[in-house]
Figure (cartoon, rainbow, N blue to C red):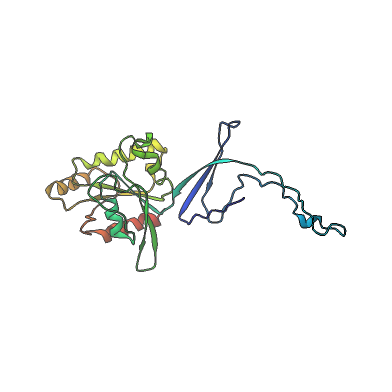
Length: 250
């Protein structure tokens, strides 16, 4: 019996075939709508009893069985496809930011790892331009070694055309968080952090330490650095316009 499964876009499946006789599995990326791959051939069909009707045998009670088809064991890996990926440490405010800029309604709570699966929202501009933004679950040091389910989270970053690093501006030396995030991305996939990107310095309304960190950081980085408050929706319009500018330049 053949079952056809349909997966709504934006999504990508990677299929792996595992066989004892072939220790090195092949893999295929299904990245476009309607793309297909043959992983196993069906068996030769049989012949039902109507095939054996004859002038002398009007109601045959026998049939010819078909041949068995191929059997394969597959591992399917789903990757989220979005124009923009929000990358940050746990509790940096990515989910709050996604809710502020898009039509998405991710779960928001004041504790780490609230987001365990990526959420995708669509940002609509007045001139009908649209972009999709994915809230990637928080990354921690060692994510490239699958610490904290790192591989499950990092794989969703790979298909993002633009990376937006969301960093908590109220933390001590927040620029170190950015460096740690970039390092984890590159250790997982060489050169991943060099994709077009910008930094949203969240919680910019957290008092003197946030203002001091921003003034110092802006002289240290070559990436666009935009202070925002996702919770109070401050500077969100500038953030979305800046993201759009980077996206349209890709």
